[in-house]
Image (cartoon, rainbow, N blue to C red):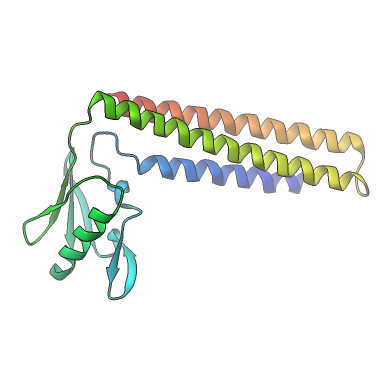
Length: 183
């Protein structure tokens, strides 16, 4: 029955990994190439990530530079960035595209922290849903395969996993909030 716990542990780990990846796309005043992870460009009829059509670099703390492998992609990349939720207007010099990140205002920083906390709460709900699913699965086993004491032990172990991952989410929230609020 311990293999059941491993399954739920893996699901909770994936939830944490997803949340951490989500947090990387939230910009905190300095340029982070991960804000472009979800931006897709039409590359010969195939939707491709920007990383797949050019080199991305951070030459200055608040600037992301994209050097497309093909010059004709500049307009397509600019359109994709404008259509995304990055919130930055790209500029180009014919060879490279630059995204200049403005300094965040105090109000914007507080809004971003609210967004971080909201995503954290969604992660906690996902963890709790996994716990609920696990407890339901354990109860179904009880009728035929294992004793009530074993079920109780499995539920206790699952609760310990849940508490651990909820604490991990709290730590992620605090780290990201601190990063955003640091001027």
